[in-house]
Length: 294
Image 1: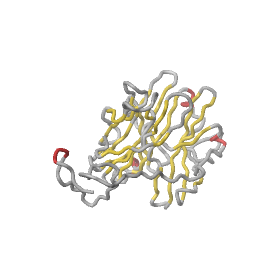
Image 2: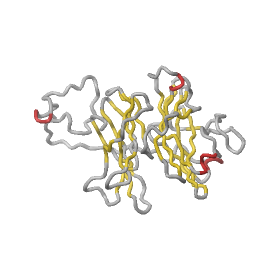
Image 3: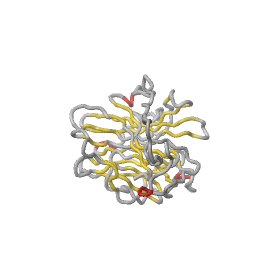
Image 4: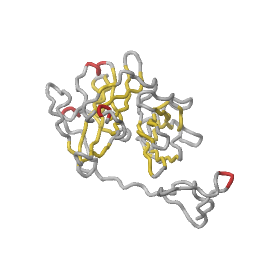
């Protein structure tokens, strides 16, 4: 394998610094022979690590949207922010909850004393279960990050989510802040973007010195595409530009439901959720790669 690129594509030698290289693309390969690139599938645990087993999780499914599993340095444990998705009559609801773990495999649901469920706060909810807002709004925090670089302790935890008013059709991307990751305050500037839905949040990107989010966009050929937006302060966001959409060769009715993105050694790894918008086909997790996050 020759570790260089031809002149027409860029410099003859690429400066990789101290970064490890995954070789998931041909960026560093000038020519290759007698070799085959093989992607190994992740090994999946045989059973879910968390299941709906509380009264406030009845008739629901649980999910983590975006990069919302964090390691708490002070508590020396992992913290998972997850949604509880329910249909109650004709009302679509998503509740927000927390689970904790010492090893990332075995999770417990602590009694946080934050939100009310049928007159008691002995639960792991972060939003009141019977809030009047649920009468006509779908509102949930989808992503949470811990931001060490923000000097304001009240903004140490940042959340990016989505609101949809079922009655008026109003929708938009919402942000909130918290000093402890449990008590969140909505920003008065909400909604910070007019679009969104299954948004995912990368967080602070030190390569460009901005916060980066991947809100959903509506494209000309699909109701679900992946967008890109940046912010200097987590409140004012650039208009969303579409960065991933169905292309020729994709199956009929193919859409991209959402895409968590993480950075590894200067490379952006996306995990698009491939969705066939017909019938009851499941979501498949795929792999996407980028050198600039766009």
